[in-house]
Image 1 (cartoon, rainbow, N blue to C red):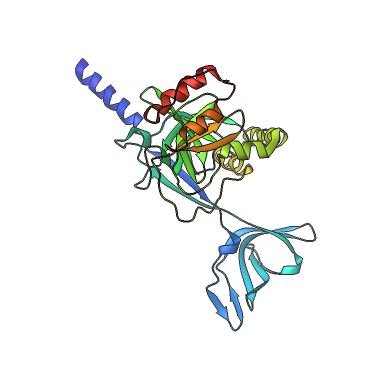
Image 2: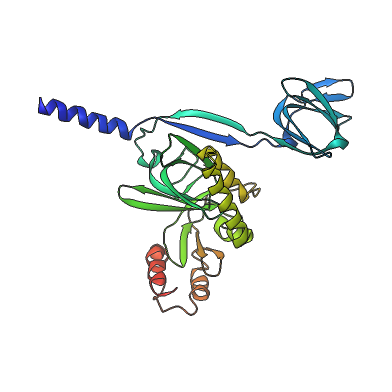
Length: 324
């Protein structure tokens, strides 16, 4: 009987770890890419889009918005509020804000790859706010061991996880088998941080393309005051009872994600990126420029010996031990 009870408890524990979680993704609607499939004479119209039209009078109208173009020039909208349909000419409009598309699905959370399951971790938002909970890497065939495009975060005390596409977070950490792996936002994804300290080492996911770390660019550009204001807004949303996931998603949008057009790219496993957290700079390192880069980078730091390409991680760790 005891063995049966123990087995039942063990199975319950396993099922708890593999519990299904609601995964929420939010996609912004770009007003410039809305299709206009309907035409009547020289006038074309869009499919209705949920949103808000702000007027020059200071008022606003919410509902389903249909856009109209005459001879390919935007000239008016029609808003279906549910109670009435209101036509508004372009000259009376100051701003149009479209609601994002929200999609929810059940995430199985029972993958053989532990990184794809929700594990203890944290995320850092563009405003500098750090939140703890559980993190899952939304890996697919296009991801690499050192570079991924999407991650999901489950806040503590909730059952709905939010999806963050590449570059929407400054960094995230995920604990797998007792080891916390840290990833930095970079271009349109996240790179695995191989070293911690003044110098952060990562593999370069892109070749022939100059990108900059989300951490070095956006955090500094936002400024301390902007970060403080954004953090206060996030806290206020929590206190006001706003949906936790919506608050996180809104806060992540406070700092613009890196949205560079990368064009034709190729994965490069033969280059490293070194991010100097003091100088707020990032350099690309390969076999041909290794000695030159390290010499410049380590000026004023204790001598750490000669760098070796095959043991670069160990060298940077040694450099970090004495260089602050």
